Figure 1 (cartoon, rainbow, N blue to C red):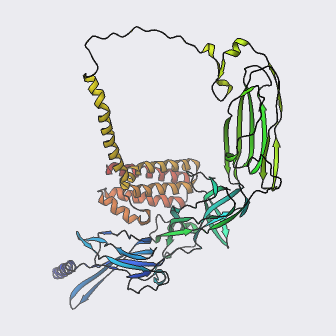
Figure 2 (figure 1 turned 30 degrees about the vertical axis):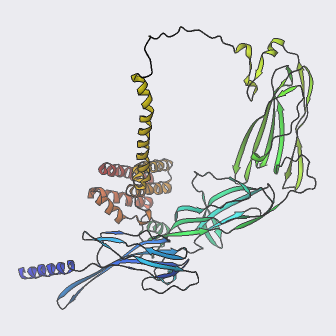
Figure 3 (figure 1 turned 180 degrees about the vertical axis):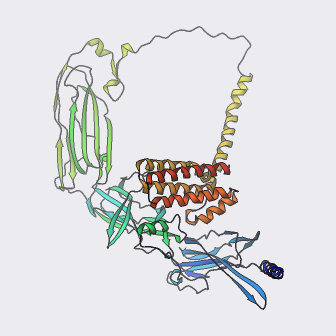
Length: 618
């Protein structure tokens, strides 16, 4: 027995010595030439287990997927000698955007505490029709059998317009939508559609979360969200172009079918959750809409009024007066309200004619605009303040408001009521002391009640020979602003430097964001909404780790969480407790029994584990 144990120890020491003596080879495989708008792969390979891998920036190329890690190992006994072969690879899928000569900088890795670097790779990007040179390990996307990609029918954006032929100034509804069959995140608009020749009004709240709904297209049920919804008003005639929108996003695509997966949709939805499944791959995809053209017709000349207001839409006008019997120098308020569908902001001032014996002040104009899925509507109020200076009976004629109605394709007229005002002679003393200094009659005042007499105070005496100039207070006040400016500049520079560190800012905001999500999860807990509760709790836990250690969500997994927490000297018991909390969050979702009790238990665990990790990291 002792002899066998001795032989095993000798073999183990020999085996370890041979493995440690193996020379580390860190290499890169990539094509030397590709075509523009072509996808290709770049692979970094080492014959040893890497402790740390750092990828280059891939300047000049767009990263579609990666890093995708793979590892293989084998042990062989040949002629009494033991050898082990370990291969660890990190592959990336790149997209050649434009012609030119580019260089991929070396990647680095650490093996047994020693740092290694690959060689730099020069890649020539030729024209789109040029055939790329075949290079081992640098096949294009179509040639890679294990490459996962997002098909155009799985994820796309589209643009919709309700009218392609309109009159100048007529309202158009433009909507950009995203259609997806796969989980999507990190939506980023690379190029907003500009609207030359149009006045645009956003109909969506920019701070509001995208509203999702289901829509069937070509027999497939997509999850759809409105990215942008706007009302456009053509300001000139002719054919106007709406350029395409460009959007970048990250899609989660399953790489392989899970072994032993059941047909139960709840079972699959749990194991296929991208937060917990390493079989998902994050792929960046760029989406485009098609260009649109709109034919803008000029307003018809037939029937056009000489004093046309320029308003286009469907409007009404109304008026009211606060009093019809007044005395001279008393204020009268007349309001005109234009209401309807169209660009309320572009409606010009009304042509109102008041009696010559009335002193008329500039109107107070207020606009209220309502935005909805059907477009822009609202009202515009013109408030006039009048002061009659002479007694008598005066007529305020009706106001005519004309506009072009695209629905009826003709010019229409709306009129207000006419008013008759009876002005009596007021008190002469009151009349001579009245003035007006504002937009409403509340600003009218009597000058006789405004006057206040000056109050004389004793002079402040000062000793002969004493002077403020040259005193200590004089120099303090002289140099104090300079000192304050220097301090402000120093503090401001430190703050700018701190804010420019994105990782530091994410680290500082991690706990705050996690607590915010936990508060939202608590609201769902109280409402009994178990599905939204578990989604929000999962995002709070994973988002906290991602922000605290500046880890991209695309590479976040249970293994990476263990590695980063271990590096920060977090206790193993606490790491295991965090992992158990993540698992409990998902198991409780589908576990039988009282869901309210399960939700309360998981919520307390999530709240406690974040507090424990935060206290230990401090």
